Length: 302
Ligand code: SF4
Image 1: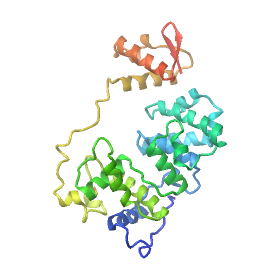
Image 2: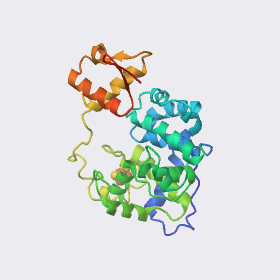
Image 3: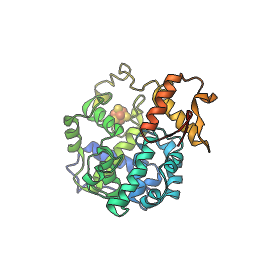
Image 4: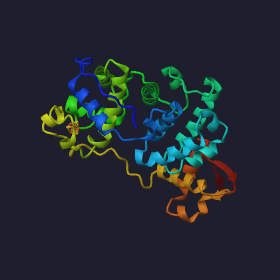
């Protein structure tokens, strides 16, 4: 089960009551996810954080389980090839993350004896690990007090504290400082707050259809008090997916992943709706990223 424990209200009388509500709600409602188990290694948590960067939990969980069974340590993954990692990435999307995870495993072996470091700067220096992921690893793998600001947490704080329907595209220093002030003083409560507000944003305070009637903050939510305005008018940020270079790149990688030999992508019937120009551009960018090899005569392989 997730590492949750009851907070002691006597020790945390100065905690924002809404923060305490979120932690209590999390104790009752946390999903039982394998990377939340007490015996999950820092490596397992790092892998989950990279997979979850742009992919929902429901798609990540089966791939994560297979991944950890095959590569339970950074050394195990580093002993394989980048192509193995890209193949095992399955349909999680953004396959550069698989490439970076393999590079990260290699760096962990070379620089840290195959262990995940807990120092923020050491984490940031690893391939594929940005500020958010480093903070999340410190919190969830090592129980450190840190400011974790993913899109779910930003949305919950924005609504409940600042009556903002949706967070701004870019995180500002002001927003970060305001969020930092909410993080409880004790490491344990800080971790629970980070995990709990993330879970609340994922399950209840969702982007387009918040279920305020089920929310522990409904009586104290600034956005609800202000009339729940601004959601219908807010522009949808989701980019049309079909036909984008990103989608075509994913289709090419999917095609090569399933093949045992180099594939002539320009002649492949599953890609005949893509213009030759876009196909060439996407194939070249995959080669430039080191995800795909050009084998000559218009054929490619992972
Ligand atoms: S009351 Fe509604 S808008 Fe406010 S935090 Fe809860 S789900 Fe989000």
